[in-house]
Image (cartoon, rainbow over all chains, first blue to last red; front, side):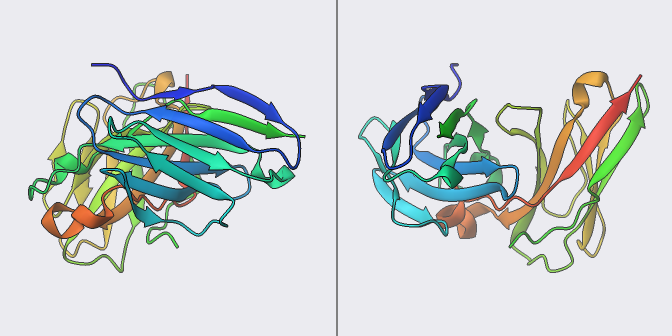
Length: 118
Length: 116
């Protein structure tokens, strides 16, 4: 079974630009979550999409947005880039059934997109 | 904020057991303990999870105290490839947790250095 894939793997942008990152979840997984990882703040939750709807949201400004398509693929967008947005952006997918079995809640992470803002 | 406390770093000799502690004194009755690890520059990897019973899989064992306020992840025979940052996370699980499933709150984790 193919894992979570993220494109592009590396990206360099300048301040003020916008960027779109893509995530393809594991086949059959309906939940996609996004995380930002920086040396200073560590791993921080951005948002989660489930069945094309945003289900959870972290504490990030409105410049960070996302969406999910009917095939569960997800994109996140960052507008008006700032130097502080330089980070590793990670995507994770999970099955998230409604069963009482917590094993459905396991998150599978992709390799990440390394964004550098100059 | 993360609900767990972990030592920032630990060393372990190759071939020996690595015991990584985690405190989660405010854990609720419906919250599970999850462990993930992140090898340098890769995405985090799920290791194991549990509610109140000890758990074991091919990667590790998880020992949860009877009061559930702390746990220990055990890598029975650590190798150099186990060098990573290990994260202990508590989160709702099962039916009650389905609405929070995709949200993981990471702390700073424990950097485990396995030495030859």
